[in-house]
Amino acid sequence: MTGARRLLLLGGTGEARRLATRLGSPDPAGTERIEIVYSLAGRVREPALPPSCQIRIGGFGGAAGLADYLRAERIDAVVDATHPFAATMTTHAAQAARATGVPLLVLRRSSWREQPGDDWRRVPSLAGAVALLDRFVLPGPRPHSDPAPRVFLTTGRTDLALFAGLHRPWFLARSVEPPTGPVPPRLTVILDRGPFDVAGETALLRRHRVDVLVTKNSGGTMTAAKLAAARDLGLPVVMVDRPPLPPGVAAVDDVDAAVAWVAPPWPR
Image (cartoon, rainbow, N blue to C red; front, side, top):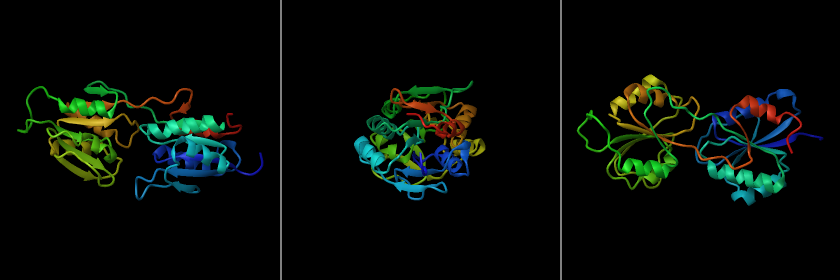
């Protein structure tokens, strides 16, 4: 092959930025020069961006639009390093890869695993979390007089609308940017960006008298401290399981393995 190979990196995570930085360094893993197109959905106004990449912001227009883009831009391979819950994007990437014959790798950090002392209530989806919270009853004495559960909701601002119909619980939500659209009627929002530590998360849960934590099983270290804080305080955690990957898709869980996959020859 002559000239630089072109890699479409579907990003937006810390792993995506680290991979882009590694691949943009001189001679990563013995590869020839790689032109990286770093693609973001555009949901955050000021995203953290890697150096030495062509940046693309916005959607592709579904699987067919992504397939057209791969052909038009002469993309040689795709790495999907989007959020573990970006199921629609991953499905579209798998469909576009099959349609064009362009090799695809999914980079997903490992899931969190339940530890001794944890009290996880696992649900298969956000809809399952909504249903569980609607009837949630905490055992034992309450640290406050509110008869409804006080919920720390950390599933992301775009998911708040799913909980807007719940009038009984009180919600504390944290996001990088203010939420838009419908939100629960009893809601307090904190604007903040990780990483967070256990001491800070413990203080936050105590200050707001939180009864239950709701989170997606995103994995990683940026926001894992809330799980340790909930464990230390004996709080239950409603844990939303990850959506499954499309069948037949190659996947790795660390940046080193993704760099090795990019090393020539790329799979076909």
